[in-house]
Amino acid sequence: MAFLNALFSAALDQNIVFGQLVGMVIVFLAAERPQDAFRLGGALWVATFAAGLIGWPLYTYVLAPWGIDYMAPVVYVLVSAAVIFALGAAVAAPRAKAERSRIYQLCALLAVNAAVLAVPLSMAASADVTTFDTALGAAIGAGMGLFIAVVAFAFIHDRIDERLVPGVLRGVPISLVTAALMALAFTGVAGIAGGLFV
Image 1: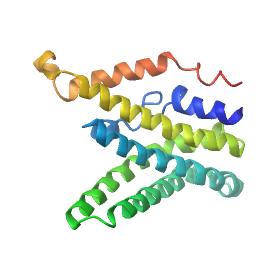
Image 2 (image 1 turned 180 degrees about the horizontal axis):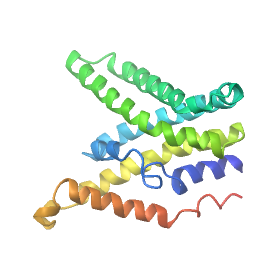
Image 3 (image 1 turned 90 degrees about the vertical axis):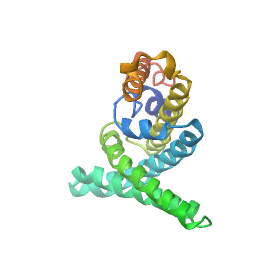
Image 4 (image 1 turned 180 degrees about the vertical axis):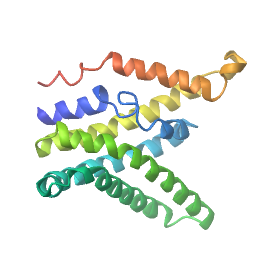
């Protein structure tokens, strides 16, 4: 039950993007096309999951006992960046040189965003997560919440008919309005998912 509670709380109640308003840049950049959103959202899910899964034991058994728990964001950044570049290298290996270069540029963008996401992950590790199954649920849930945010925003952004939007709001302004409404929707259901498995 602790696993499911942590999973749904991290994915829906404490959604990193819309609940905590962190990492919105990658949502805008990844939401060009829904096809790209699935790949980028999946890569961020894996990186966030790995950062949470590897970062929590490092925090619990190394950083906190040694009194250097303030280094937790750095650990999460290094772990998630390493996972992103390892995934990128595995995907780029059989490709042509130009496509490999594009994949590595995308990995750099994802690694920069992982640096932003490391702060809420390290805060979650230090505050609520006390057992391994809770850490596992929070890691999977944080990645799932990020994936949901990227994909949902991409599909909604794709459905907006720019011809019906007033000229002043076209482009980035309508994206910000859409993101604000999605954040409002996520905060409107805050507390529901986490309380299902208590």
